Amino acid sequence: DVKVTQSSRYLVKRTGEKVFLECVQDMDHENMFWYRQDPGLGLRLIYFSYDVKMKEKGDIPEGYSVSREKKERFSLILESASTNQTSMYLCASSTRQGLNEKLFFGSGTQLSVL
Amino acid sequence: GDSVTQMEGPVTLSEEAFLTINCTYTATGYPSLFWYVQYPGEGLQLLLKATKADDKGSNKGFEATYRKETTSFHLEKGSVQVSDSAVYFCALKSGANSKLTFGKGITLSVRP
Image (cartoon, rainbow over all chains, first blue to last red; front, side, top):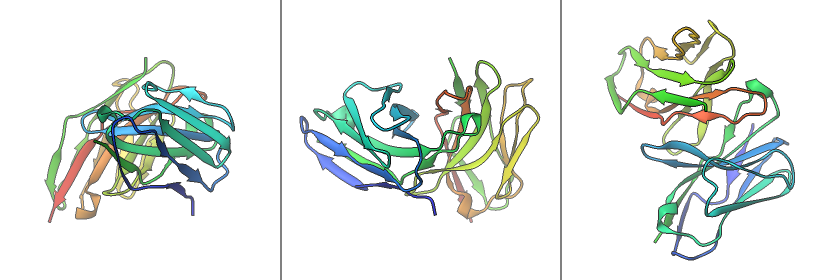
């Protein structure tokens, strides 16, 4: 069965800390994505990657960076966490299927920044 | 740019009621349209999709028809169950190399 695994379900950090959110997929997918989900705002794309060591900014990249050193792993980094980064973070992956692209999502990490 | 507009929620229905969740879109070209569902405590999963005008996507009793003339992709189910309680997201993809654009999502609660 297809699987996208996020390392933590809940995370509590302090303002100014450097935070790493990890995501691993076991489907040999080329594409990986990081979204944040907020009430009333839906899903917003932070960063995505189409291949190892490749990254592209999404709609809200400010305050975030990413790393993709291996095909199966895509890390989201909050360089200096702030309270407005408290959110649910969702990782997703997909194969290159063009218009038929189907995303597989992890269960999410609820991050609280105090 | 591309955008997806979903009706305001939340929606609360009794079991066996008829469900309609509205979704309209703005896109360049001819997008593919999707409905994703997020059950409590889980990530999103694809519910159904349609890739061209007049296509009907269906899954688990849910249906949605790609209406190009009204730029809509409304989700319907004839008889909802308590287990359908979830958040539903409409989404589109307007090019092979473009990203998925999601609507804001709507929470459906079905009471016994």
